[in-house]
Image 1 (cartoon, rainbow, N blue to C red):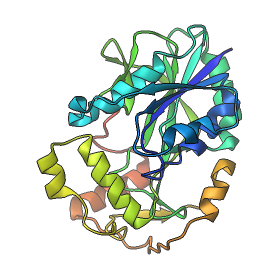
Image 2 (cartoon, one colour):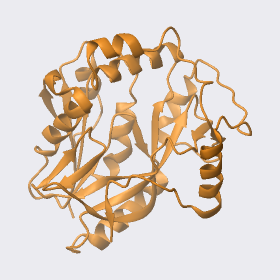
Image 3 (tube, rainbow, N blue to C red):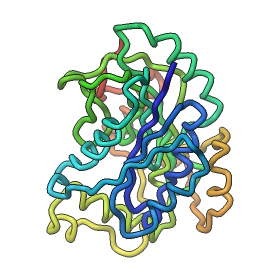
Image 4 (cartoon, one colour):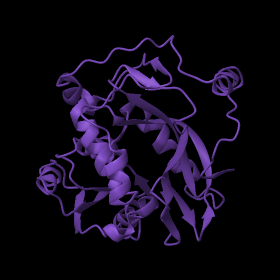
Length: 288
């Protein structure tokens, strides 16, 4: 079985993306990792070049910001990386620049890839998500956070990144997937407050017009306290994140017993906790 990893990145240093840790977290499962490095305003290219692994293959790209509405440029860059994976790979493992796979899930992921490699019904593997917020001690637990997404797909030329690069499509159709008992750790909301504001401004610019960005960008340091609901994280962090966590230089404290919900969301929150059912959940896949 051959596995190709793929990802894309731009301005990783400027906006403090843990892209090195992202890549390192899937390297043990991959025979190669294709990284589409967009032309940047910082040392992102050198950052990737300095990762000590012969498995990494870099392609240099230029982002087409005319495709920024709705985040289409993110899917475009994902597809550029996907197009360069080896043709003889069985699986393609996608990881975004603020996502990490805990090493404790490697065995589960590899086992699923072996199990479904020859199963024509299964087009991808569906992962659960933990969204860290404010620090490495809290995760979001409200309806605003997506719960699952596809991160491993069969190597099929008809599979393409969809919309803003959150999922994939097969000739426009949702992929048929098997859910596995493995999590993606998402760290997009764990940055120094001033850097989080800069990151949000940049991210908005990949979705909206300059006028919209000017009117809606955060002012000053990002205020992490304005969140509806969090819970304490009681697990372990991935080994590749150890050094980054040790360098954390800001504090964030939150009372997880306090919930900032309206009546409707309060009811839906408790319903989900009791039953596991999320009413109206958008599912970017089809389970088989």
